[in-house]
Amino acid sequence: MHIEDLQLKNYRNYEKLDAQFENKVNVILGENAQGKTNVMESIFVLAMAKSHRTANDKELIRWDEDYAKIEGRIVKTHGSLPMQLVISKKGKRAKYNHIEQRRLSQYVGNMNVVMFAPEDLHLVKGSPQVRRRFIDMEIGQVSPVYLHDISQYQKILQQRNHYLKQLQTKQQTDQTMLDILTEQFIQMGAKIVMKRFEFLHLLEQWALPIHKGISRGLETLKIDYKPSADVSENQNLSKMVEVYEEKFAKIKKREIERGVTMFGPHRDDLQFIVNGRDVQTFGSQGQQRTTALSVKLAEIELINKEIGEYPILLLDDVLSELDDYRQSHLLNTIQGKVQTFVTTTSVDGIDHQTLKDAAAYRVESGVMARIQ
Ligand SMILES: Nc1ncnc2c1ncn2[C@@H]1O[C@H](COP(=O)(O)OP(=O)(O)OP(=O)(O)O)[C@@H](O)[C@H]1O
Ligand SMILES: [Mg+2]
Image 1: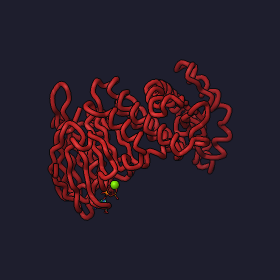
Image 2 (image 1 turned 180 degrees about the vertical axis):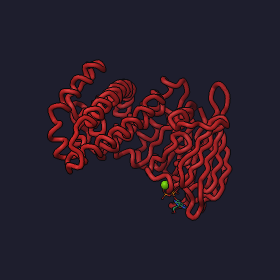
Image 3 (image 1 turned 90 degrees about the horizontal axis):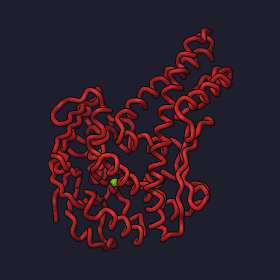
Image 4 (image 1 turned 30 degrees about the vertical axis):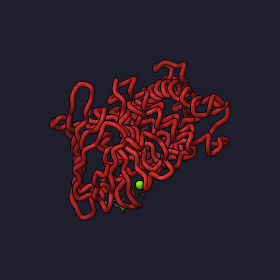
């Protein structure tokens, strides 16, 4: 799929933008702080209904304005469809094909994007939270049910934590409500963990050969899910529920003492392993980069497999972060099949035919114009 045009109104430092894009590589050039990342982010937000940079939607609205609007036309094999997202101080409104979508989980997934920004190097190095966010976003793109489940899970978790706090401070003494919440929490949590196991398994299948290719056959990548409780990939849903039930019965007293939910998907992590060793702890800078790049390229293939269309690739400031070999590996892979947006302050030092044939735009203080 590709995005044919994009309109912005009061989005970050854009008062107004109306741009046409090519179904190939689009290079966005500009000095620092002019609005390159903002354009990339707006395409991401149009697809995901949330930013990759902030959890606070209000930041996306241009200062001193009431709302921000993003619109774009997405072209797929079977026709083209308009998407629209309005972000106001009261919340978000999403339209797909001119029809308002009451649930964002129904809206997200109609347009697929893969973002690769310098922060993604944190995917390996950063906190477990970064990896959980990654896995939730990616599964959400291909599974509306999962998005729905995750938001239900968050609500139950909040309620459960709230109730545990009340028991801890003795504002409540009756544990019946806790038991009900625990059961709901376990049912939803087990569903989520099952889906995460399944997704990581697929992701690993794609990432392994890609990683081998980039490392010239020297490295073998494994991706492991690290659950906080003793559940495993070999268990079916009812077995997993049983394991959680035992666990939560055992730790009930401790949870009340601490006033917080101690186990579950919100405490899980994932681990990248190269040649048998954890990349986060033992990987070189280069191995971490290769891992992040392999995972992103694997995502592209996985989305294509699940959806039947390649996603739109957003490369914000990363080309210059990769050495020549990884750069050309990336550009060779996407060439001719993935609509790609590349931001950079300068194309000097990026010597690849794909960029010479690309459409080019220049951004200056929130104004973008086509230059090639
Ligand atoms: N809500 C907002 N309203 C108005 N301006 C904003 C808002 N949020 C951010 N900006 C401004 O947008 C400008 C451009 O930001 P952006 O991150 O897109 O720059 P960039 O071109 O990617 O720069 P760099 O090369 O440093 O990454 C910043 O100067 C920032 O102050
Ligand atoms: Mg930027």
